[in-house]
Image 1 (cartoon, rainbow, N blue to C red):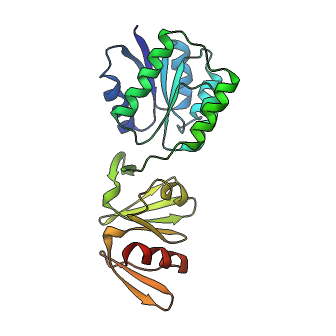
Image 2: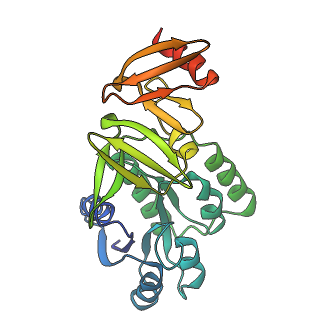
Image 3: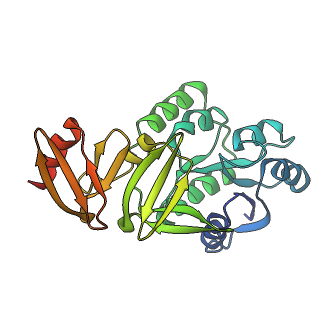
Length: 250
């Protein structure tokens, strides 16, 4: 069975990754790509694909809105960096939900599930089963970040988590410091923190997370710690941050 597949993803590198992963399956046939919600709706209606690999956060309209507006209803596997949309995805009868960054093994498992259900012509889960899927999705452990995609001039490039010195809250965004550069990403500090290795990254202040590999020294200042990073940045940790830092480095 040949599964006619469409990719909807606004980030060129992420789109290329999906294309590369999909090319490993001779029963997946890529029939189209879209980088925004309006183009996705038009293309889904025109091509009527069997499967759509659909990012949730895309320009023009969300991936969830795309599904609601499309006239045909293909099988859908959502791809996103945010797990908060999992319940909505399963309510729309998504076949799977890939949390970025995901690897080949996770992608293969999702594609095999899609293939099995399409071959067997299994109808969407019954309400009781669907509720169980939603509960499981909400309870899924979050995959640790290994890289972030950041905007550099007119390109989107991957940045290894190991190379990041610190994260700082910047209004509703987060500023990422790596080397002698900084990048602004549209996530909250809490979202980032929840997917970092807690043994290597420490939230030393309400608005700052530091990579412990880049801590040069920590100086006691009353009940708080003054952190000096290898790039000579000085950060006065909060009392709770100082307590956490003492547990990690002393």
